Amino acid sequence: FFFFKQKTAYEMLRSLVGSEMCIRDRHTMDQDFNEEELNEFKETFQLFDKNNDGQINRKECGNILRAMGYHPTEAEIQNAYDQVDQDKRASIDFNEFLQLMKIAPKNIMPEEEVIEAFAVFDKDNSGLIPVHDFKFVMTNFGEKFTEDEIDEMIKAAKPNEKDQINYTEFVRNYS
Image 1 (cartoon, one colour):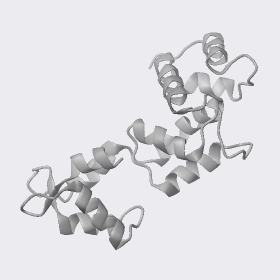
Image 2 (spheres, helix red, strand yellow; image 1 turned 45 degrees about the vertical axis):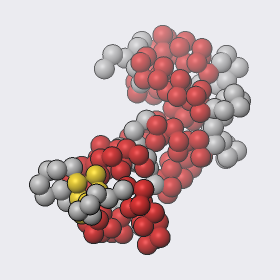
Image 3 (tube, one colour; image 1 turned 30 degrees about the vertical axis):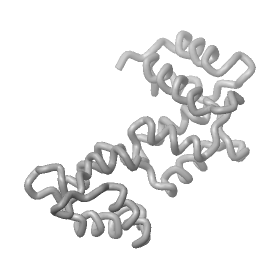
Image 4 (cartoon, helix red, strand yellow; image 1 turned 90 degrees about the horizontal axis):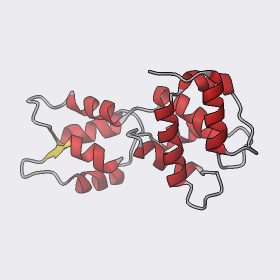
């Protein structure tokens, strides 16, 4: 990774979040993100900031994480959100969002890892797992789902004629 010199990153952050906003953790952010990452985060933040007020709420935060390839549970979203919503206004600004992006990769399982977890049950490497294995995973690992929620997911996953689910397609469509 290419990291910017402190002054360059600081100037870039100021232009990203506006001159009136305070930039907290300036030194830490310089070391954590490169220009490409900062640009991606800013574009993503602006895309989900529907009313252009420089703030996103918890629901929008979950949508951003999913759009960035993570598959967080509601509890993971709430936990990460609570860690960065420093002023407890029920919304976070771009600086708090950057803090979220520092912790999200450590605390939320990316889509590829969820796919790998399902792959353990894919005995013949076909990309398919039996519905009963899918139910086992969904009731015993991570966020616990109700029987009705699992039935809805199975219906949405459209099992094939052998009662198997394409887990990669499921994870990508469900997240």
